[in-house]
Image (cartoon, rainbow, N blue to C red; front, side, top):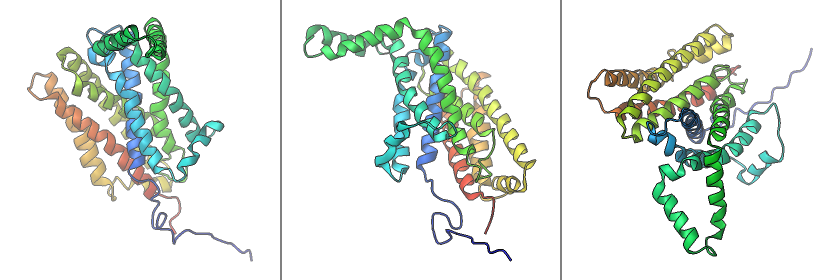
Amino acid sequence: MMEVTITTNKMNHLVDPNLHIWGWEVPVYLFLGGITAGILIVVSFMLLKDNEEKSHVVANRLALLAPVLLSLGMVALFIDLEHRLYVWRFYTTFRFTSPMSWGSWILLIVYPISFLLILTTFRKGFSKASLWIDACIQSKPRIWRYLRVYSWLLDFSEKHRRLIAKTAIPFGILLGIYTGILLSSFGARPFWNSPIMGPIFLVSGVSTAAALVVLFSKDREEIEFFTRVDIWLIAGEISLLILFITGMLSSSEQHLKAIQLILGGEMTTYFWIFFFGIGLLLPAFLEFMELKGRKIPGTIAASLVLFGGILLRFVIVEAGQVSTWIGY
């Protein structure tokens, strides 16, 4: 007779009866990281199309939000860390098989790219601030001599604008997909363990970035263009969600049990009514009616898209922690 030893953490309140290691910080980080990825992609695409005049907010101002939102997401992630003083160790090595290692280095590269993207159109998008900085440098060169690097970077960014945009797009895609792969790589959680998770988070991130444009823009042509774009992105997100659900339903017994969390289980209401209904279908309908000439404020649909984007992360993170391979 062979002796079997089982070590359990049943007395750990973070594990029993379900895993509850991740709180609100991780969904917020994934949401803000997704928006940042979407901003990089959208801004770079419009710069490559030379649509600065028609897309003033996107081409000239939206990029400023990328490092700001990403920094807020990093703060949320930092709060979640148990050993905050050791975060620097992520950058002492690179593990090819570790999604977190990939993510830490992607984030490190995204920051300088996003700053260069801001500088490509800084003189047009923030003309008053640019003129003020130039005046400071010229009036008191000894005091402001360190800002000469700024002038050099500004000229460099404007000269190599297309190259910076072409570089930002793949890193935006990597950042957007990473936010989903971070979860899908956890094989111990069947709800997360799907190859569709990365594309879902990427498309959702670009959709929320398009919603930001609609919120901040005052140009009717720009609003209409990104309203159309967002409708197609929502359609793509719905298609990916259908693939995710059908893939889970046709997979192993553990995956089948995991997907029941949103098919009659405890997360059903949050997923189908609040996220899928209010955060996807309703804004898509409102955007469609707006394009048909109905007087519907675009800010309503855009706000609902942002609401759906963050709720998607909360639902998926929570459902993944509840799901498990073995119930004991």
